[in-house]
Image (cartoon, rainbow, N blue to C red; front, side):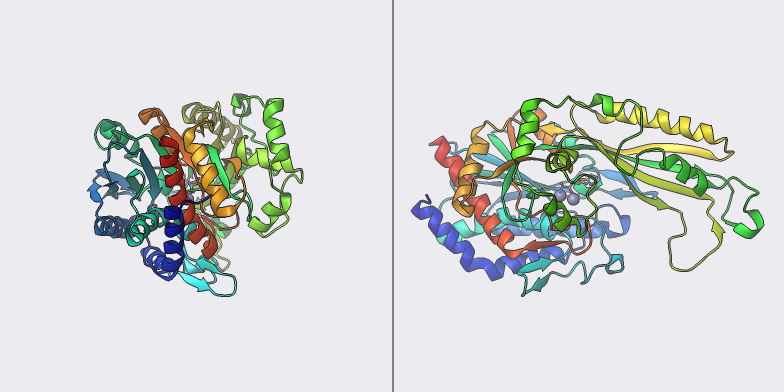
Length: 478
Ligand SMILES: C[C@H](N)C(=O)N[C@@H](Cc1c[nH]cn1)C(=O)O
Ligand SMILES: [Zn+2]
Ligand SMILES: [Zn+2]
């Protein structure tokens, strides 16, 4: 049951709808791709945009520099982290909100129907298309929308808020763990609980709260041979080809049914209990949800619990791409001299990035040795993050359950997410506080894919959810 103040806040969000969409359009128009050095200036631009928005609302906001990194062979400045405090009333609870303002790469030529960095409102479907709309600019702006609506409606925010917004989440959160450790007793002092809105509902209709994430290790496997690219008519059959070696090794990593072939990797997975299995059996989810989200009927298992467990509690290995290969249109008859295969593993309890890196490196080197090739192999592990599981029996989750019931009229599902937000575990371990994942978007939003979108209803109702969650946190404390 909403209080008069909560009702005022909700009405204000409804009244603000066009302005909130405009704000998202501005954010999406800044192509803050963290993984490409040539876009780095836009990550800075995006940090400034958020800093200005927060300062305009009266928050004490600052940019925290993170130093430099080497990317694409160049030494470049890391995007700063945006820190902001809104309120410091010792009688209120303090909620730390985290989000990220960087995005995955996107080009129209990848197959987008619209320009990825222009927010396009599809009036027929009520959807907003654009890179970052759901991951994670919509949710980040959701928190700002909440603060603004309280001011406009003349209501006090019932909690103190701390913002930690980073610009490197899609590229390994370089430097963030160190900053959190250094600021533990400074900026992060007084935090009572953490809330992150950066994942998705299990399907398209039912909201959820998330208490687990898979971890990740990302690998680059390089095979080098000839000193330069060669003519396949002249040198085909004469030299060991790097691409042939790469395909041979990469084909030994995972089967088409998703079984990871690297010895020791599956053995590190925590055993499934009957109690846990039952939770998947009763979860509100169908294989049709996966088919809707992927736009295909390519699900490996059509058993609901098996599909859910594949996303939530088992590791997976995905092949992402090959650098240096001939990838353009046409029929160029080249033998590439050096190719780099990219793949990653999603990790689950009790796997750690360190243990996985060791197993993968040993296996890849052994598989390459079996080829008897005179080329050379180099395997490098890029960024990594541990899996995370939180205790959902906490007031932080209870507040989110109540707020969800008010906004959506249903009790949310309790899920684990297949993606990774490595800083989640850092917050839990370093600050020793409960962390809640409170998603705004849906499973079919197309995060990381072409035609990423957020439904206006998710953006608007999701903003209400974030605001009412803060009210429930305060009600719990009273
Ligand atoms: C779940 C979150 N919104 C997300 O997309 N996280 C990324 C993090 C990542 C790691 N390497 C590159 N990006 C993900 O799970 O892929
Ligand atoms: Zn992402
Ligand atoms: Zn994200």
